[in-house]
Image 1 (cartoon, helix red, strand yellow):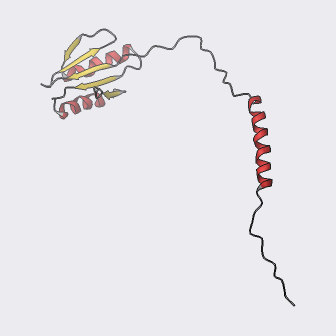
Image 2 (image 1 turned 120 degrees about the vertical axis):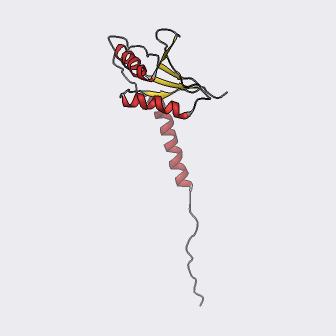
Image 3 (image 1 turned 90 degrees about the horizontal axis):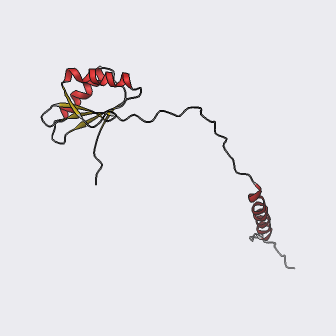
Length: 137
């Protein structure tokens, strides 16, 4: 008498899975064009927003002199001393709300001179101060 042993089946039948995936694919292909994409209903504003204000430019020359250029009034450069700098910046910020200040240091100026200007503006609690640099070619 021979005893026949049963072996475990080690194959998986994937045909039912493929059928299910094809049915789901057809359902999604039919339903996708019917879905309405989300649309945003934006509110309307009665008045225009103020245009951006050109920044006030504080130039630090190679010899340490300071000059201020107000682009909203033109391209004229006004030389100022460290004592008058804070007064000029505050006056410009009182006239135009949101007036930014940028510091443009000459390439050959000592870094300490630029830091002195930043310190003057910081002690005067001037908001929105940045550094101006030329983009690399």
